[in-house]
Image 1 (tube, rainbow, N blue to C red):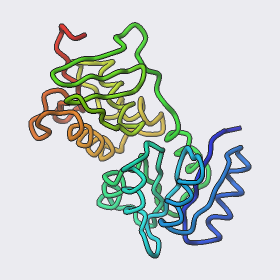
Image 2 (image 1 turned 60 degrees about the vertical axis):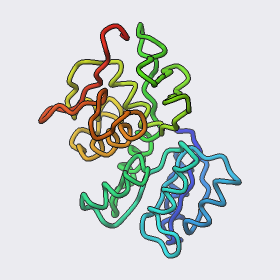
Image 3 (image 1 turned 180 degrees about the vertical axis):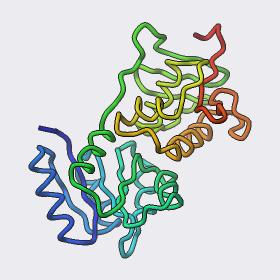
Length: 233
């Protein structure tokens, strides 16, 4: 049985009923909202671990709701939509979602995505440093805090998991598939657009010049690596 508190946000009552029945049957606590505005209110009133957020709703849409949630929270977010092309997928991830599931989806697939969104890779890496200090940057792998220029920068759980995994394998090119499976889980591997979005977001948050990264480097046709000066390891 799973544990966790999930907010289901969808304007279709039947979908909310199916979600509630399925998720409570798996041991999750479920709260419902029928639109983005109600979702924001429910999040103010209830402690939640993950949001299942429909992209296409009347009133405040899923993308705007996702942006507003992400502006003040590190909660896991999975976006649900009937559209499955890459533009919409990137838009969802860019708004702050951890994952994206296209309708219609199988319930076992959705449950697997929920487990992936809630999973956390162990940090700090065994035998590795607990705190990384670079020029103007401090990354505490134990407390999961990042300080840039003296101010704390909020990373989503998946952003931090990706960053900490890359630090644990610093100065080594890591293939896309290996990164995806390490951070999201074994069912992932081909979703390269996830990495493009998440690495770009990390660059904006920690790189002095995101367009000319010093630490989060792209390895063409391979993947990414975190460049860590040898004396900092």
